[in-house]
Amino acid sequence: MTFNPSVLLIILLGIGFPMAFTQSITANVVVCVLALLYLMLHHANLKTIGLVTLISLPLALGTGWSFIAFGTGDVWLQAWLQVSRLFAYLFLGMSLTLTTPVKDMLMSFVLHLHLSPTFAYGLLAAFNLLPRIQRQVKTIRYSANLRGMTYHLWQPQLYFKAILSAIQWSDDLAQGMASHGFSEGFPRTMTYQDTLPKWQWLVAGILIIGYVGMSFFI
Image (cartoon, rainbow, N blue to C red; front, side, top):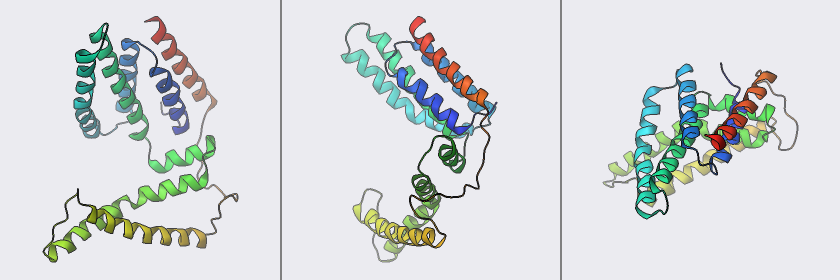
């Protein structure tokens, strides 16, 4: 079963917001398991999932230990609660970002959640520029090496030169959008279409209500 990106976002928000206030470790673990199953069913990149989880482990351990060392009351319960909540948020986010291309996600939000087309196309342009930015940073560092200089990732000179290139690209992008007839505030013809069966909204509501109910009674 594949959820529409708009439905997935509503599920994420509907579960994620009450999760910040509930005190159920079991409910958080159930969310992690269901999100992981959804990722597996949609053949998400296991290497990416493992890498993100591995990077998050120090954060989880640090969060848990801070509650054990400095908390009051049942510190172990609070530590496990915070750790389970962190991973629940993590897997919820991956269930959307690792199963849906950025373009499909943004266009779905425009169609079904009334996201501003200007904002959506701006984000899409930024994502499409990421490979070009990476190449530009490599070019800047290579040019500096030819002059006997070394730009490290923590040096502001590298980012200053990259920002200058980005400003030039933004001007080119604005001219390109204007030449294609894009005007802010005016209606646009949407060539992208996707399906959103009504039963998916029903499933989303059941999942959200189920999580809230489970978090209060388990």
